[in-house]
Image 1 (tube, rainbow, N blue to C red):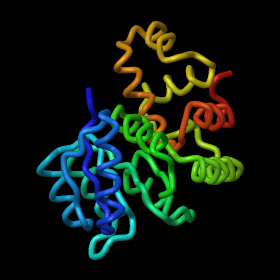
Image 2: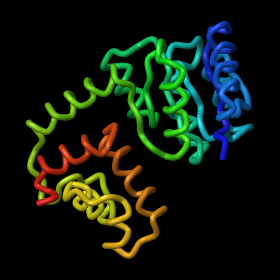
Image 3: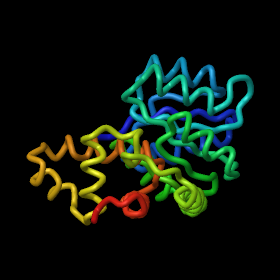
Length: 216
């Protein structure tokens, strides 16, 4: 299924160029554009796209605020940030607002397209420039994380069980068989785990899980 995309950026040249680039691939349907945060929220509610490609610095309501509102109003719409800013404050503000991906402008067409399709399918993805920073940040947090009677209290019991199996090296298919769950259910739970742990991929989830004593 071709992902539907809304592009939110206050620079018309970049916005139109991105729309043309994505449309030219034939793998994405750009259903609309927005020039600021308020318009992006309104258009997301009206169009219900699978993905909103969101700039962060826009006049009026910024991309972080717009992301929060879109995530709250449109649960099936995922936000992919595409911005010039890669400082820690911007990255983590966007992720805490509910963004499922973060790329820096200047990313190649293939990287942007891959990120759009990944976010549309419920995955969490970071560009290379951001992934290392995220990994270092959460690795440093792990070193000072207080001891809890149950690791990762933000996870449900099922999500923690699945994270434990991920840390043991099991694939999604193997987890589905082990727990007698539908593959789609496992995929959804894995995506939720990645989002709640704010990790970019399976390897980072395994690092956090094993540091917390899971997967033994």
